[in-house]
Length: 340
Image 1 (spheres, rainbow, N blue to C red):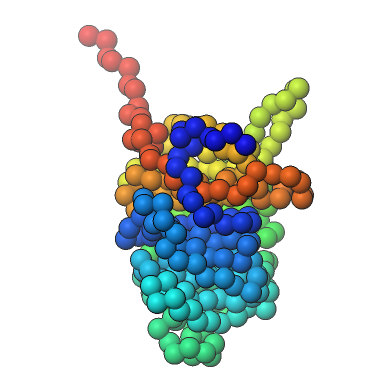
Image 2: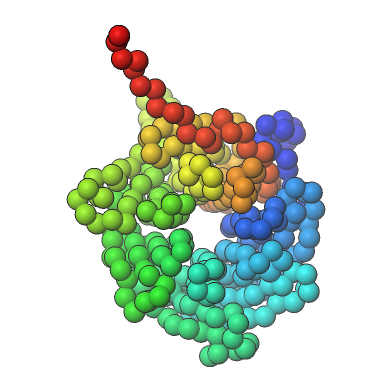
């Protein structure tokens, strides 16, 4: 393949050798944590383009998240939840689910690790506990279906499962959800992400749509919600629709990027219901997206997600692009000048 022009961003060296399941920037630096179907979790310094460390697991790794700048947690298809300390080259097992662990989050508010699994449960772990499952497991919470995506804002946790269910929890009282919802999209949920201001969440589906939802259940709160079509194209009069795999909010402006199986990354202004930018097409599906803590960098996983089965595809790659303000800053609304 011809080298992509630098408009795609800088390609990280030593990428995973199989599908990229997730990537996330640290809250403290430009460190980037990447999980993959090649059974690895890798820590990169994205600015310096250096692989800082790598752990190999017993099976594909479906998600990862940071704890601090040099340690994190991983969710394995081998049903295992692990803590990884890169600067010491040390790993330990927090515990297990009864099926693959699909997603993992670390709550800075409670100091707990939250995992969602295809065993239809959510588990909370205290990584400060001594090693051993009984001593680190805080609680297990049954879900209506397999867990597909999680997102946190402060003490609020949003859980999206199969069957288009969405449960909203307060981490301080996990005995039952604060809200039990149904996705307003008709098709399977791919990704859920809380707004940076904590008022709601964006949810994407396999059918080229994103829903903008709000926690406030009053009529005025719910009147703000809407959904929009994206990541589709018309060919010979037919609509071709792609899954929307990834949503990432800009930490400063609250605008957000979406990545789809069409290989495109779009940036949206949710408040003004406008698309701000579309980046040049990437070599294959966008599997994951993450903005750095200051919003100056966007990490893009260009990685085939097997939506069309096993077929020859471009190699898995991670691009880190410098974000230009014009791409992510909301444009002020133009008001007509009053007639004098």
